[in-house]
Image (cartoon, rainbow, N blue to C red; front, side, top):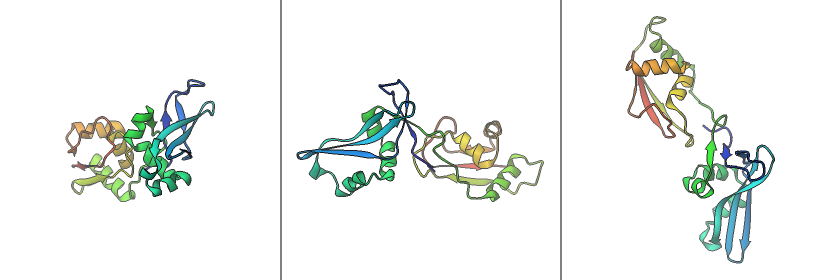
Length: 188
Protein backbone atom coordinates (compact mmCIF):
# COMPACT_ATOMS: atom_id res chain seq x y z
CA UNK A 1 0.00 0.00 0.00
CA UNK A 2 1.21 3.53 -0.69
CA UNK A 3 2.62 5.58 2.19
CA UNK A 4 3.02 8.85 0.27
CA UNK A 5 2.82 10.22 -3.25
CA UNK A 6 5.55 8.93 -5.59
CA UNK A 7 8.22 11.15 -7.10
CA UNK A 8 7.49 12.39 -10.62
CA UNK A 9 10.24 11.64 -13.11
CA UNK A 10 10.50 14.53 -15.55
CA UNK A 11 13.37 16.80 -16.62
CA UNK A 12 13.49 20.22 -14.92
CA UNK A 13 13.95 23.04 -17.42
CA UNK A 14 15.91 25.13 -14.90
CA UNK A 15 18.48 22.78 -13.34
CA UNK A 16 18.18 19.59 -15.47
CA UNK A 17 17.22 17.51 -12.43
CA UNK A 18 14.89 14.63 -13.17
CA UNK A 19 12.73 14.42 -10.04
CA UNK A 20 9.73 16.38 -8.82
CA UNK A 21 7.78 16.04 -5.58
CA UNK A 22 4.08 16.81 -5.46
CA UNK A 23 2.17 17.67 -2.33
CA UNK A 24 -1.28 17.38 -3.86
CA UNK A 25 -1.76 21.08 -4.64
CA UNK A 26 -3.75 22.08 -7.71
CA UNK A 27 -4.10 25.28 -9.71
CA UNK A 28 -7.41 25.92 -11.44
CA UNK A 29 -7.87 28.69 -13.98
CA UNK A 30 -11.13 29.61 -15.71
CA UNK A 31 -11.29 31.60 -18.92
CA UNK A 32 -14.91 32.44 -19.76
CA UNK A 33 -16.59 29.02 -20.12
CA UNK A 34 -13.34 27.05 -20.37
CA UNK A 35 -11.31 25.68 -17.49
CA UNK A 36 -7.72 24.53 -17.06
CA UNK A 37 -6.43 22.56 -14.08
CA UNK A 38 -2.88 21.53 -13.17
CA UNK A 39 -1.28 19.42 -10.47
CA UNK A 40 1.70 21.36 -9.10
CA UNK A 41 5.05 19.63 -8.58
CA UNK A 42 8.30 21.06 -7.18
CA UNK A 43 11.76 20.13 -8.43
CA UNK A 44 13.61 18.28 -5.68
CA UNK A 45 16.88 20.06 -6.58
CA UNK A 46 15.99 23.73 -7.23
CA UNK A 47 12.35 24.05 -6.12
CA UNK A 48 11.08 25.17 -9.55
CA UNK A 49 7.35 24.55 -10.02
CA UNK A 50 6.10 22.37 -12.86
CA UNK A 51 2.44 22.17 -13.83
CA UNK A 52 1.10 18.74 -14.77
CA UNK A 53 -1.97 19.19 -16.96
CA UNK A 54 -5.16 17.62 -15.59
CA UNK A 55 -7.76 19.57 -17.61
CA UNK A 56 -7.00 21.68 -20.65
CA UNK A 57 -9.48 24.11 -22.20
CA UNK A 58 -12.40 22.01 -21.00
CA UNK A 59 -15.95 23.34 -20.96
CA UNK A 60 -16.88 24.00 -17.32
CA UNK A 61 -20.26 22.32 -17.72
CA UNK A 62 -18.63 19.07 -18.80
CA UNK A 63 -16.61 18.77 -15.57
CA UNK A 64 -18.29 16.91 -12.72
CA UNK A 65 -18.98 19.22 -9.74
CA UNK A 66 -17.38 16.66 -7.37
CA UNK A 67 -14.14 16.83 -9.39
CA UNK A 68 -14.14 20.64 -9.25
CA UNK A 69 -14.68 20.54 -5.49
CA UNK A 70 -11.77 18.11 -5.06
CA UNK A 71 -9.53 20.30 -7.24
CA UNK A 72 -10.42 23.43 -5.22
CA UNK A 73 -9.90 21.54 -1.94
CA UNK A 74 -6.41 20.32 -3.02
CA UNK A 75 -7.45 16.72 -2.34
CA UNK A 76 -4.29 14.55 -1.96
CA UNK A 77 -6.38 11.46 -2.83
CA UNK A 78 -7.23 13.04 -6.17
CA UNK A 79 -3.53 13.75 -6.76
CA UNK A 80 -2.75 10.06 -6.13
CA UNK A 81 -5.52 8.98 -8.52
CA UNK A 82 -4.36 11.36 -11.24
CA UNK A 83 -0.71 10.35 -10.95
CA UNK A 84 -1.72 6.74 -11.51
CA UNK A 85 -3.92 7.61 -14.50
CA UNK A 86 -2.09 6.51 -17.67
CA UNK A 87 -3.73 9.28 -19.72
CA UNK A 88 -2.43 12.00 -17.37
CA UNK A 89 1.05 10.40 -17.32
CA UNK A 90 1.12 10.15 -21.12
CA UNK A 91 -0.17 13.71 -21.67
CA UNK A 92 2.52 15.12 -19.37
CA UNK A 93 5.27 12.71 -20.47
CA UNK A 94 6.07 11.63 -16.92
CA UNK A 95 6.93 8.43 -15.11
CA UNK A 96 6.66 7.66 -11.40
CA UNK A 97 9.34 6.61 -8.91
CA UNK A 98 7.74 4.53 -6.15
CA UNK A 99 10.97 3.86 -4.20
CA UNK A 100 10.25 4.53 -0.53
CA UNK A 101 6.60 5.45 -1.22
CA UNK A 102 5.00 2.12 -0.34
CA UNK A 103 4.98 -0.49 2.40
CA UNK A 104 4.13 -4.15 2.61
CA UNK A 105 1.49 -5.33 5.08
CA UNK A 106 1.79 -9.08 5.71
CA UNK A 107 -1.03 -9.38 8.22
CA UNK A 108 1.03 -10.91 11.02
CA UNK A 109 3.89 -13.22 11.94
CA UNK A 110 1.94 -16.50 11.66
CA UNK A 111 2.46 -16.52 7.89
CA UNK A 112 6.17 -15.78 8.30
CA UNK A 113 6.64 -18.76 10.64
CA UNK A 114 4.80 -21.11 8.26
CA UNK A 115 6.78 -19.88 5.24
CA UNK A 116 10.13 -20.25 7.01
CA UNK A 117 9.20 -23.82 8.01
CA UNK A 118 8.52 -24.65 4.34
CA UNK A 119 11.54 -22.79 2.99
CA UNK A 120 13.86 -24.44 5.53
CA UNK A 121 12.34 -27.91 6.12
CA UNK A 122 15.33 -29.12 8.17
CA UNK A 123 14.60 -26.55 10.89
CA UNK A 124 11.02 -27.67 11.66
CA UNK A 125 8.36 -29.95 10.35
CA UNK A 126 6.39 -28.49 7.45
CA UNK A 127 2.62 -28.68 7.63
CA UNK A 128 1.70 -28.56 3.92
CA UNK A 129 1.41 -26.06 1.13
CA UNK A 130 0.65 -22.39 1.68
CA UNK A 131 -1.61 -20.41 -0.66
CA UNK A 132 -0.86 -16.69 -0.57
CA UNK A 133 -2.88 -13.93 -2.20
CA UNK A 134 -1.21 -10.55 -2.83
CA UNK A 135 -3.50 -7.52 -3.11
CA UNK A 136 -2.27 -4.10 -4.29
CA UNK A 137 -4.00 -1.13 -2.66
CA UNK A 138 -2.67 1.00 -5.55
CA UNK A 139 -1.14 0.17 -8.92
CA UNK A 140 2.48 0.26 -7.77
CA UNK A 141 4.88 -1.58 -10.09
CA UNK A 142 6.98 -3.92 -7.93
CA UNK A 143 8.96 -7.07 -8.65
CA UNK A 144 7.02 -10.07 -7.24
CA UNK A 145 10.27 -11.71 -6.11
CA UNK A 146 10.99 -8.63 -3.96
CA UNK A 147 7.48 -8.68 -2.45
CA UNK A 148 7.67 -12.40 -1.70
CA UNK A 149 11.14 -12.04 -0.17
CA UNK A 150 10.10 -9.10 2.04
CA UNK A 151 6.77 -10.61 3.00
CA UNK A 152 8.16 -14.02 3.81
CA UNK A 153 11.36 -12.89 5.50
CA UNK A 154 13.56 -14.61 2.92
CA UNK A 155 16.38 -13.34 0.73
CA UNK A 156 15.71 -12.78 -2.95
CA UNK A 157 18.20 -15.54 -3.75
CA UNK A 158 16.20 -17.98 -1.58
CA UNK A 159 12.99 -17.00 -3.39
CA UNK A 160 14.72 -17.53 -6.76
CA UNK A 161 15.91 -20.98 -5.60
CA UNK A 162 12.37 -21.90 -4.52
CA UNK A 163 11.03 -20.84 -7.94
CA UNK A 164 13.73 -22.82 -9.77
CA UNK A 165 13.07 -25.89 -7.60
CA UNK A 166 9.34 -25.66 -8.37
CA UNK A 167 8.44 -25.11 -4.72
CA UNK A 168 7.08 -21.60 -5.35
CA UNK A 169 4.62 -21.46 -8.24
CA UNK A 170 2.21 -18.87 -9.57
CA UNK A 171 -0.12 -18.44 -12.52
CA UNK A 172 1.62 -15.12 -13.32
CA UNK A 173 5.22 -14.62 -14.38
CA UNK A 174 7.24 -13.80 -11.27
CA UNK A 175 10.10 -12.15 -13.15
CA UNK A 176 9.71 -8.52 -14.19
CA UNK A 177 7.32 -6.11 -12.48
CA UNK A 178 3.65 -6.42 -11.59
CA UNK A 179 1.17 -3.82 -10.39
CA UNK A 180 -1.90 -6.02 -10.08
CA UNK A 181 -3.09 -8.69 -7.66
CA UNK A 182 -1.65 -12.20 -7.91
CA UNK A 183 -1.46 -15.44 -5.98
CA UNK A 184 1.30 -17.95 -5.40
CA UNK A 185 1.67 -21.34 -3.75
CA UNK A 186 4.59 -22.42 -1.61
CA UNK A 187 4.98 -26.20 -1.57
CA UNK A 188 6.94 -28.30 0.94
